[in-house]
Length: 414
Ligand SMILES: [Zn+2]
Image 1 (cartoon, protein in one colour):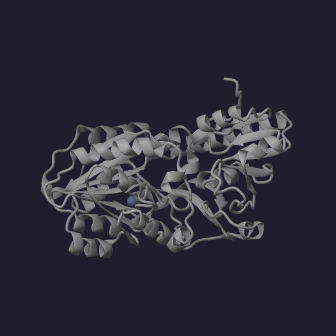
Image 2 (cartoon, protein in one colour; image 1 turned 180 degrees about the vertical axis):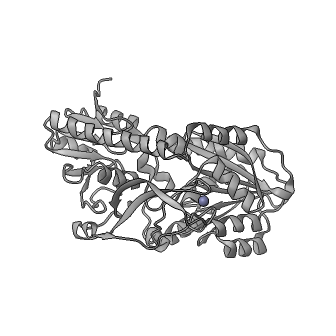
Image 3 (cartoon, helix red, strand yellow; image 1 turned 90 degrees about the vertical axis):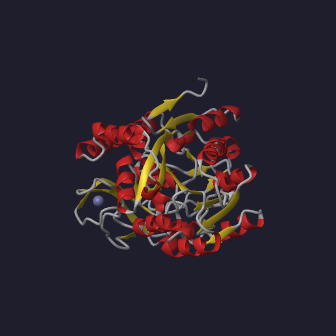
């Protein structure tokens, strides 16, 4: 069953109704819903997953938004679940804290603060911290661990309440959450209202021009409703009285950007990197149909080659390595639901559960060897090094296929 739409919407940045679908992907259920039973997993509704390009401002977004309550009700992943995140994030936190103005309140607000891991870095640096997080469980757990966390979404309303109680923060951070915000106007107005001329706003977000260059289309899923470029952030700032004063590419998640905003009235100086990255985007042509067509072609090619390899090696008992939003996108887009028998994941909390839509069971990596699965497909290919090491350590004797960035048969001895 494919649920057609919650609603079709305007461009979230410029409100234009003129947009077109440029990257139509296979419909999937919400990607983070691991179920306790096969029955529940396979009865989840599927939603269209199509990327659109605004004809007026060039923003890339999902015109279909699944109601946020549905996405976050039983949100399953935690910051500390992502391997390798903590070290890089600690370095980013240290730089932000060093650079921001600490004249008065000295507090850091983190939007979408999850389990409080990020704010804990600032606490260790001597900062006062406050989180706001939509998942009730994460908010409670973070508060219990000493990271005060408000349970809710960031909006004009919550910004006003925070401002009354705590004043303007020295630093506002939002890591990998802005892309999940359907109402960008409300979010950015809230940021503006809460900031004074000493506040630094730091937004970390996936950067699709870099991600798509390595065919990372599996970061497209229903919760990711906006795909930001440097030009998008310039446009958003203009609209809400903020200046994009700096932007840096960051290696996280296959390509990300950190955008730094200050209020227009602060008259903060602007880094030359802002203009340079916007220019680069023009050169790459990220707002052209041609660019999306070439991504479509490369994805199709990788999909065909993956199936060709599976046929060539006569793969029979196939296991997919990794369980995540991205894996859900990939498993449907590459038409692997009927070929894969089970999934495996290092995280014990995911083992024994059932994957959304496909109902595939999640087993431990050791069981992959014990039960003699003949082929592993590295579904969570963003972590391919970790997975290859893991398989080598387990002396996995079967075949290994990696579907992206380009499909290949992996030789574990290398
Ligand atoms: Zn637009």
